[in-house]
Amino acid sequence: MLRYVVPLLVFLGVAAFLLKGLELNPHEVPSPFINKPAPAFTLQKLQSPESHMSTKDMLGQVWLLNVWASWCVACRSEAPLMDQFARAKIVPIYGLNYKDAPSDAKRWLQQFGDPYIANLVDYEGNVGIDYGVYGVPETFVIDKQGVIRHKVIGPITPSILDTCVVPLVKKLQQAAPGQIVTRDSVEGCV
Amino acid sequence: MSSLKKVLLLLMLVLLISPLAIAKEAVPMAMDPVLEKQVNEISSELRCLVCQNQTIADSHAELAIDLKNQVRNMVKSGQTQDEIVDYMVQRYGDFVRYRPAFKATTMMLWLGPFLLLLIGLTVLVINLRKRTAVVKDDGDLSLEESERLKTLLESESGQQASSQNASQQKNNGEDKL
Image (tube, rainbow over all chains, first blue to last red; front, side, top):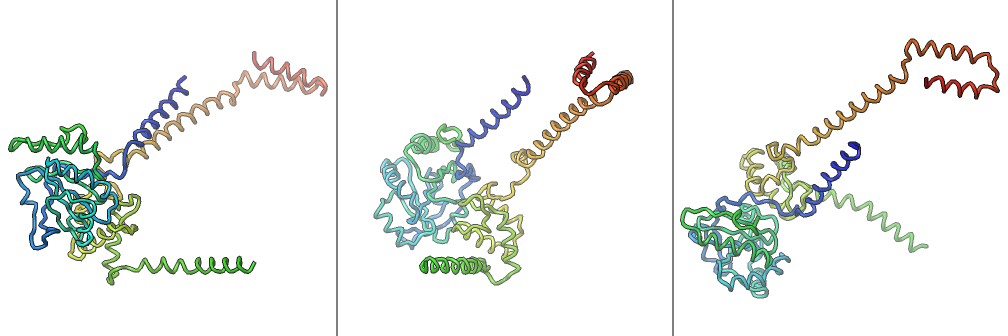
């Protein structure tokens, strides 16, 4: 009896691991930045190169940093949703224009829509490296203290927006000073 | 026929030339061979996150090239391999190490194969022992048994070949007693 039960158990164990493996996406590498301060930067604005914006300017409000580029095909699929989301005025969205020619970026914004309060130019991709960006688009949710609370890898979808980003942003906005809210409190983000 | 020959000739030519084309790409970007060797060594320890089964030394993805340049700059500014790897881990997480670090969460990764080997060896040893026990049981005759064998063989030697079958049957019957 044992000689049949043991192989069966071993098989079931292996099958369970493989089944779980099917659900995992190897391209979603957990970000080491979750619950860590957003790396500081001071960058030129795309539309007005003479003015700059830095991460310090954003302290005190919850904001999204959306990494995009005109050469990024997946960003196009994300654009209409981002546009719609920006019009709802739930949270300010800033763009990090990653390794892009400014002229291409401007044309892209005209063509696919501009949901951004401002766009920051990361021409060399150094800020991208500082933020551990490895695939565009990526979207960071940053809280009032300048701490990264969540990162969406790949294009944002309506379901990610509804179940994770919006609830998390609202919780972060409602957080009392000193109160720490992490993404673990939002079911859709975990 | 001649067109086929032409095609074959062309194919051979392409095959001859293609290694040269690859050889050209491998020329180091900077002139300093010592620096480049160091950069390559460190890059071989870092995973390219775009094409995950390659190191950034092997990969031609744009991010890998950027990261290689970053490594080159850091080596130039005198940073050690550990410092550079830490810099990358801070930004891209543990996954960026091509060789996972040895710590609590990766323990099974490192020790798992040895654990499996140990289990396999244990099962093997147990099975082998069982088997030798069975063989010993059959092989070694007790004094009594060898006596009986002797008498059997002696009683058989005088009999005719035609009655061999019968004696064998008898033999078997006695064996079981």
